[in-house]
Length: 260
Image (cartoon, rainbow, N blue to C red; front, side, top):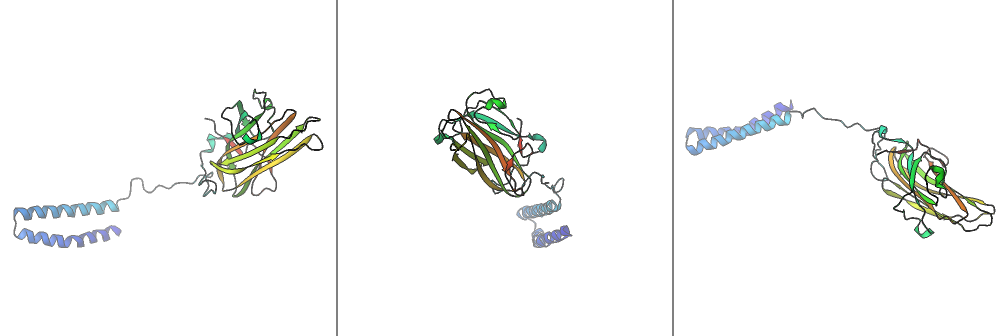
């Protein structure tokens, strides 16, 4: 039906041109013959154009299915990537880096690393990283890299549970720092000074948050503490989903990593 309408429109458009062609043909001259040829060429071009408009594109219109891991809109940084789940494995990667020397440099992530491991939850001994298979005797900061799996829409909280053990009679207090980024955007940072308690053990929790849609989000967390001699420090990454009441330790189902 649409083709017929378009063809009729082309025919009406061509009537004045055809009438003019007949008038020119009544008194044929070399100039009028050339003009008639141009008119016929224009008519052919119009018909070819109408035929192209009515012809469907090769293969028809293609739909773009939405992956179950994609998000419709992310307040963090547009839509989070939704790569094939098969390319990912449980747990995040922890890169152990030498601990900053003082509290003023805790936010600076050192360029060098001393090793790493796959992290699926549990405490990380920042003052004895050898418990994680890293051959390094000094204190470290932990850079956690991977993908956070958001299963529902709402506000998520990411934190660290810090536990400090003071040797008897040792009173220098460590400072600890937490920074997180999702899809390259900072979720801010937190720091605290963990004072010596009445006993020998102390703890602190640092928390950051973000509004997310379901999907996979590239995650980077930096946790570091100053480490005076005689102090043992562990850090455990925590997570709270919108439907959960409390912060809890992360698991390999919450964090994913990609092996290059």
